[in-house]
Length: 333
Length: 301
Image 1: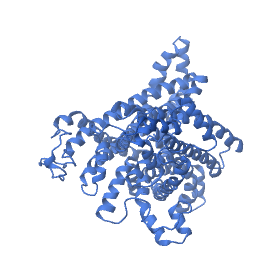
Image 2 (image 1 turned 60 degrees about the vertical axis):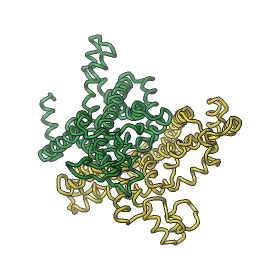
Image 3 (image 1 turned 90 degrees about the vertical axis):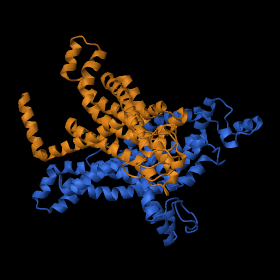
Image 4 (image 1 turned 135 degrees about the vertical axis):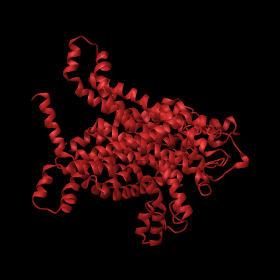
């Protein structure tokens, strides 16, 4: 197991190197000059030259890339042009918001999808299966940003039930500790702030989680259908167990293995989805930061965010593979 | 065991495993409704623009932000902030959205099937290189690569297709490679080799025809995801240029008016949703009929 994980880890290094090269080249070769975008059109040549020198843009591209690699290996992605701060710090202030959002999106998706998938799968072709599969199909076909807009329109605009932008109402939250508002507020026993943060996160999390909900529901259902045909289920029934126990104990625990993998695979889609959902809800996360950085041609920040996302994606898939062995004792690496 | 015997045995186990008789009518419902939806939108894309009531880009400043007035009115689905007719824009949008999606599916299918077949058939160094490329591209969270490429290329229809193809050939390549690996050892390939067929002939004449069914299924799901990705990129302002009406650009324009004009985001979004729903229905039915083995992998296509 340890050997396998080491092998996989070593295998990701060249992949990450290639990705960094690709992103670096694409971003630096993109049209648009960060000096003009950030200093304004009316700056004189001397100022532009000074900014270029400060940001290292006056050097050949391969020198810039090698310098980037050298500092990135030490965990330093350089300084943001726009925020004049180390990229790592800028990302650090924004990342908790995205992680919190993704966490709640997954929570909503799994809490709804797994029971729905189990019910549908254990009674194929019943009315509940029809409702469940229709729901799943709607989920995978829903453009999350449109759902986001419609949720704002309906629940916030017409019914005036929930806030539509930001992470909390100004002044409610206590001092920031970890950057995770809900977690912080629970630690500080600031219950109004917890509730306030929950009302803020609900709509974006729902919009972000809807595709995953649909996919998880479908995967759970087909996985349940498959496990129901296994011999050990027949054994469980032959022992005289009640159907409810058979489904929830014996079938579900085995059927959830592929579901875990899909959660891991879908995290990539979730991260990309967060870019667009965060934009709609003015959620101050790293996704909306990417769009800001891209529009300002803030090279180090864009590269930093893309690399962070890719690293997270690769790491999560590694963890999922490890988890696989824990959940299913038949799998040995 | 002769062929007939194995066939009857196989169908016997199938029957034990699944309630087949009840599955079939459902499949037809799926295939029919999905096909109907997709057909309607394709027709809308082809003949729609000639029958659209207005020019989609014509600004009528005296008729801005008109609410949908129902059938028979001048602006059936209302007008937007510049007085442009929503119905005409939605119809024109279907042409662009479907065109982009079809182009993406065909180009990525061509690239993916070719590379996958080469990778699986030749193995060795070629296989290693292609699989490394697959690994690198696949390590990008989807959409992120699209955004990065679009930042590099700039807005435009052709660029958008390119950016979407960049990641969508991967599912074809992976599945096709796996199938080619198993096809390579089959008797008909050996027979062709003995008859002196070249590698190229074997791949194009004997391997690829066997991959069409699976690729068709992957293609439908790729189509659905392309439509959503096109709309997402256009919504973020890095996809289609703003002067071309598409469902994504319409949604982007609508964003700031959602509190005042519900019809602006409703109709283009509904079009995306229903089209993707139809394609997914069709894809589900196709998969169940042609290639049930894809059931699991269908999740992330």
